[in-house]
Amino acid sequence: MLKSQLGSCRSELSKITTTKPSTLPQPYWSTWGRWTCQHQGSVCFQTRERKCSTRVEKDCEFQPGEMATIVRLCSESTCPDFFSTKITRTTATTTREATTGAAKLVTSAAPKTTVPPLAVQINGPNKDHFLKETQLVCVSNPVADTYTWKFNGTFSLPRGVTKQLISGHTSGGPGIDILHIKKLTESTFGTYTCAATLNGYTAEQSHFIGILAEKPTVNIIKPPVSSSFALQCQVTGYPAPHIQWDFVPKSPRSHGIPPGVQFREEAYKSTLVVSHYNPVDHDGSWYCKAANTAGSTVSEVHIP
Picture 1 (spheres, rainbow, N blue to C red):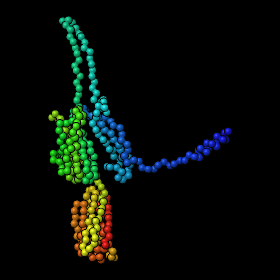
Picture 2 (picture 1 turned 60 degrees about the horizontal axis):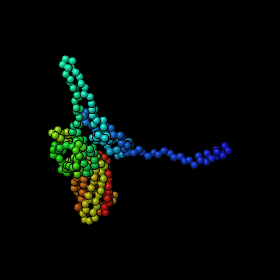
Picture 3 (picture 1 turned 90 degrees about the vertical axis):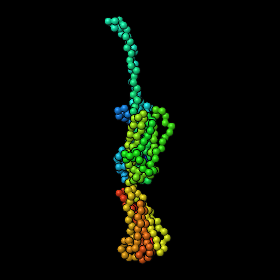
Picture 4 (picture 1 turned 30 degrees about the vertical axis):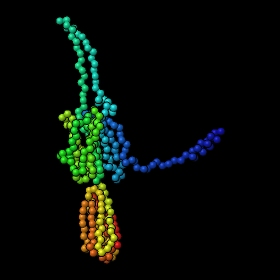
């Protein structure tokens, strides 16, 4: 009987397979932490954080190991301790003065309710991609009478940056005003300030938005080759890449741009012009290289 049971156990154990633990990298971001209520005087905010958990290049939006934080205003349901008020009820007592025998009624004063002052918070990215459409959201609690935006300390907003008013605010709830940035460029990135005014009281909050560094991409446009031709190198990336041409001829001579070639430089574009095409001088591989602080990229075309 015992032998039979041992044999059955060995049979079951033989069916069990083992696998090595996975060696896949951890997720790009760790999970969000819990919302926490933070009191600063008579103002209440909620924050939560998460950490970039890998050190693989480009996994992190900013720097490896950096914390990402979300901030929002508290509500009565999420932070009840902040909004609760202590109401002390004192029963009226009667005392009799010894000298006059007159009755005196002593009652407690009505409790005072503390109304939170106007608080302002801006939600939006700290950095975003070059030429990307983005927005900043100004949240006030309670709803403000007016909202005004400033850019780098002035009331003049850049071209392509507009306000979008949000209607339908509920009385006593938060107010929202959105700043729409059509394209994030060198003229629209910077410090934006939202000023909310309620009953003559103004509260401000500032937020800086920058541009993410991006490695260049390169695309060479090659037209049909005739007695003259032009090659156009179109690039992307931020900061604006430096563009450089090179040439390796088919004929047995050293590489380099042959004489008689002209260049037209524009933003994110370089055009190479060959006015008098000569196969001996111009047949071969043409290279366009774009480089910035984020890296470099090379593309090539062949003539003919």
